[in-house]
Length: 171
Length: 171
Image (cartoon, rainbow over all chains, first blue to last red; front, side, top):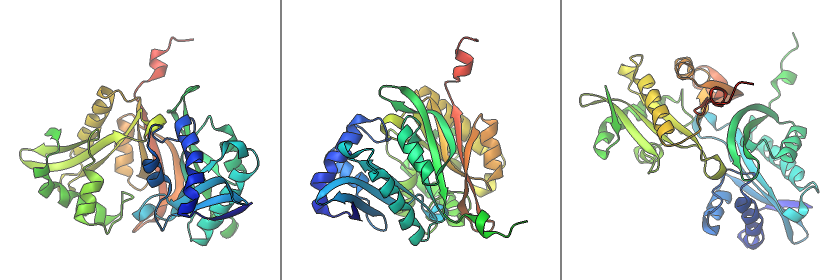
């Protein structure tokens, strides 16, 4: 599997992945009725944001975007999103994109990576993020309206890239 | 003091309030170098968002905007922001705007109100939000670069408007 920067020629493969996830409405706080044009504007954020695809040969298995989480005094913390093709889930694509995002954020000089709204029902993603070094900072109760499970929590997750504990003198 | 819907004729009084807060860069994750046009687009969100001013006679003392925090499965939680004229701080304007926002959110049918990024250094605001019934759900460490204090935490704060504990039968 290869991860490389998104190109517009990837869109015909990226859109069906986004469309399935957006329409399902069970993981992201995105408008499930949005159009293809709106989804493109949402996902393919302009530079300095970075958008990538995970490929097996010519086949797009997943996609991720990454960017500063907030402007101004919050711009030293990155954020991002992942979507994996339904048929490719459970095969390490999300984890590879997560590793890539952490490397990108370190290289770009970010101090940490924050996910603002991870549905607590998305147990596999939460576990994968934790295995990458993210921790749950807090959970907003019943903030995500899952189409089958009803209202579940939304986790704020954070990965400190500076690891000050390791850098500061002991004592 | 009166709180009413923002009108474009308020902008000449609203912009100096925003400008001072934005340029100071010590409370909001906004680009401190943004233009007046950008600040207008940022603050005066289009409907269904709601934007108000707090008035003493003809004088604008503060302003607030309020809206759904996220689209789709997150749209039942509101959010918003407050800015108070420097000379009017400590006189209850922020609290009056906070009360107004909670009333607005209840009337609009929201289940809760979330503040996504409250600088931990903004102790007065945090205390005021807590007195309105908000609690700190979690704190992202060192996520806010305060111009004088360095990196401080960013609180996620939440006010549950459904109070399910009070509505559910005991036991």
